[in-house]
Length: 87
Length: 114
Length: 170
Image (cartoon, rainbow over all chains, first blue to last red; front, side, top):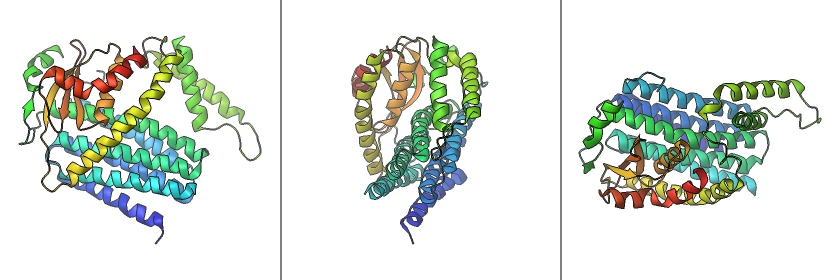
């Protein structure tokens, strides 16, 4: 078991904690927050993967995931607030 | 040497990430969960990406992870702000431990203006 | 002028992401450079008014100097915040005393208020819930309420950032 396997185990624990909140969240905003945080944790996962493999496309995936996740959270929040997307 | 330092920084980031997600499960209402999760997971992911830079140097991966770090520091608090306002306006109850709520006093004015 | 600055920054970000030189052979990818110039020009023509209102601060080197001073201050409070929140999350009896308080701000520009709100969100126990642009009020969720008075709360939450942010953005 290398040190990177240990890192992946911690990140998987984080992801399962987020998934618990997505499944059990009593209200809709809880689930949106958990999805947002899951995206940020996955960017960290991409960072660890890019150290482990030495490939730079994992970091490109991470950047794209951060930006798309941000726009998704904003859109879901505006929808929940009951406004149009222009404001 | 720089490889060991990079791995230590990544490990610190992972600890912050883990306790952020732990707080996301443990705290009682949406606002407290947003606080714990946003702060700890943002700084944790920044530490992981900083560890990538220290481990690999300013190569193709290092520059990209610096850019990802800037994006995360700018975007995550903004998303947290939008979600918490949407949660309040959509009528989520505050936790039982709440001691003061000065937003409710001005809520009528704010709704009128929008 | 504003379009030029936006063009400059977007082209820098493009060339950092898609590095147009082959590190091994020294070959230059001209197609990469041209697509980047085209994309940065397109962004500058369409979206320039989204980024900032006045260009006097962007070309002023003094505001970059204050930004470099702001970074370590901000990082220090950010680390304190994280250790504080970690302690509250691990503690078996959850020592929280949450509440929403009002604070005042004296910053004028949109980007300054945005930076202040983001800094508040990332620092000890506080989270910006809403911003009232007309009356310059911020509604802040505080995980451990220490004062409900508006002036005291302003000094405790925003005071340490506002002085530097005013020099950067105003």
